Image 1 (cartoon, helix red, strand yellow):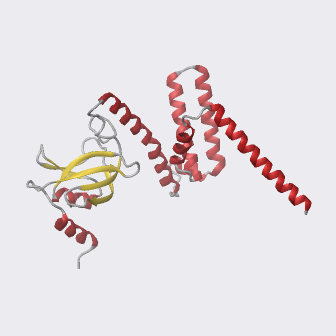
Image 2 (cartoon, one colour; image 1 turned 90 degrees about the horizontal axis):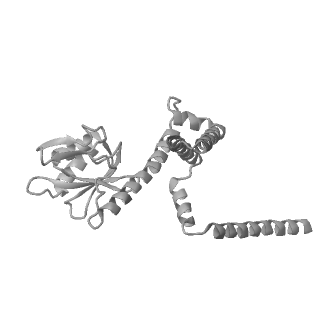
Image 3 (tube, rainbow, N blue to C red; image 1 turned 60 degrees about the vertical axis):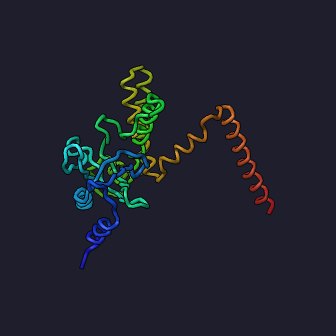
Length: 252
């Protein structure tokens, strides 16, 4: 009797439409952010190795051989999900990259715009940098499930509110000192430390980084005075509501 892997392999073989060279294009997408990382080509051997190892393998058209993505750089692509398109002639791989996907050092191979490459490169770089926070958050969630104390993040989370908050406070203090000393390299280092521990605190509380993005997006374009005015009105409304409730309760 065939096991699940053999059944899937047989279905892929029957469903996939390879070209005249026995290849099919495979789009790799970051499974967390949805960013398209690269495009490669796979034959049946590459697909089989990808399924067996859980790491993305391609067929190199230039070198005419099987290659594991990251075999030189160490930046592997760990498979999370595999999809076929409606025509059965393209594979979509949702993967977790262990480092930059592109040989240039960029997180994605798609960073050059056709119309305005300078703008496109800048936007792609900013997007890749933004992904780091998502990646850190995902790592924190994974560490949260661990019972070991060998990991710094896991031991920090196991320490509860007090330990997590203590580290955030410490790092915030380091940022203040760095800014006061006007040492740019030190400021960058300490701010990175603070951001890291803020992400840990978000994971500790179960608040996705996306919620912070949403809040910042909500504030963007709104003047500080307008924001404060709305906050003040909201606070007054809450206080008024509490006062009315207290009066009703006292009158009973």
